[in-house]
Amino acid sequence: MKARVTVTLKAGVLDPQGQAIEGSLASLGFGGVKGVRQGKVFDLVLDGTDVEAARTQLTGMCEKLLANTVIENYQIEISN
Amino acid sequence: MKAAVIVFPGLNRDRDMIAALTKIGGVAPAEVWHQDADIPDVDLIVIPGGFSYGDYLRCGAIAARSPMMDKIRERAAKGVKVLGVCNGFQILIEAGLLPGALMRNTSLKFVCREVKLEVTNTDNVFTNGYTKGQIIRCPVAHHDGNYFADAETLAALEGDGRVAFRYAEGTNPNGSINNIAGILNAEKNVLGLMPHPENLIEAAHGGIDGRALFAALLDKAA
Image (tube, rainbow over all chains, first blue to last red; front, side):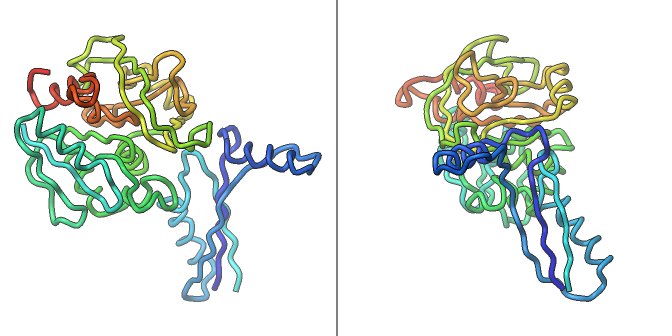
């Protein structure tokens, strides 16, 4: 089973890296970019076939390590 | 007064910290490797600065989840004083011993220079060697020192006198909210700060403004 965890900054948390990327895109001539927020992606390979058990385990991983829940949100996608 | 310096792989300010504690306290602190079975019986535990685990994932995130941190958490709960400087502060935050988060500097640059700090509160065992409102010099060297906390946490820190140090007017090097440079836990026996007071303790450093912090902790005259 495979899983993808996406970690993004919460709304309202300043993202200077995203702002720098936005500025760089503008300087490259890409117009119309209204905002950029930078995040992280984790691809995991898991044992077993129980999707709900995997979701519980992944939620624990996010809460304890993969995301800093003070400033970040996470999203879990599981595929077979 | 006995002290221990905890060393995680990738820290690089441990020798500076040991030198400061030895010169001011008169006794060398115990050096504790992160895989050691236990921490000796000490009154002060220090986590120095550096780049534990190469700053992988988030600064301090991996060290904060090591078995050694459980031992530090137990000691802190018993009232042992815990000081985290720079990466040590990041580790304490990631471990949940201090609230909030330390984010990338707003400039996106690694900042290595001297700043001015206001000693915001002195009713604690770390800063009682200074006077409230005193402005001191202190070096900083970090990439992720931009303190952030939600409004509720911030109100608690400010209301309970748990902001120990603030960057003085105009010298905030990282965009920290409320110019926060160092904070205490609710019991005020855990302090984390981004600046490096251990690097301003003798004439050869060009000043001694950092001395009073260690002198107070080690029961010595500054």
